[in-house]
Length: 186
Image (cartoon, rainbow, N blue to C red; front, side, top):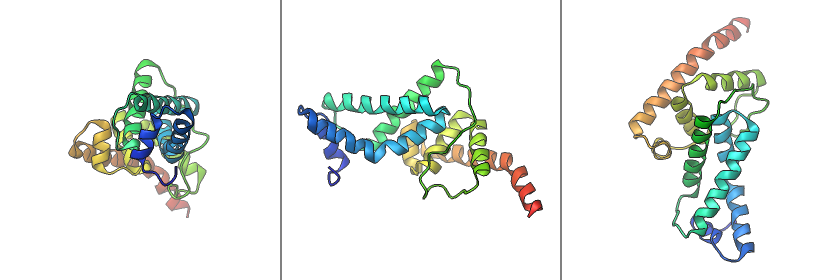
């Protein structure tokens, strides 16, 4: 299945042969689950709930495939499903943010070595307005282009650029005292 495109694998998800559909789902999960989980984790702020959102997202994908819909961009579709599930959860539940025990980023994405800095950045993300945080996470952590962020959030590219710029400004303001203190100690 590794040689199949996402579009081909999506078609196999709806295959009446359960083993073929399971293999296709396993491949889609292997390819995209880490990024979808990372998105859910950063938006929701809770490991267990993010895991539930991830599972629900993949079940929705499977249901969609069984209905014989055409999807060509599986990751984009998964991201839209995950976003809707996260936003619905946040709307329906009061969420308290606990300090993160762990950041789920791959080594190539995580250039910050100090756990203290990672915790600071993570807590700073929680201080951002939700629409800034979402755009920032999609762009900086998930590596989506501005147009892909716009497509996922239903916003224009211009709005996305403004939100990401403002998110970065706010993060700089929040983190500036910490980095200033570090420079004075060095």
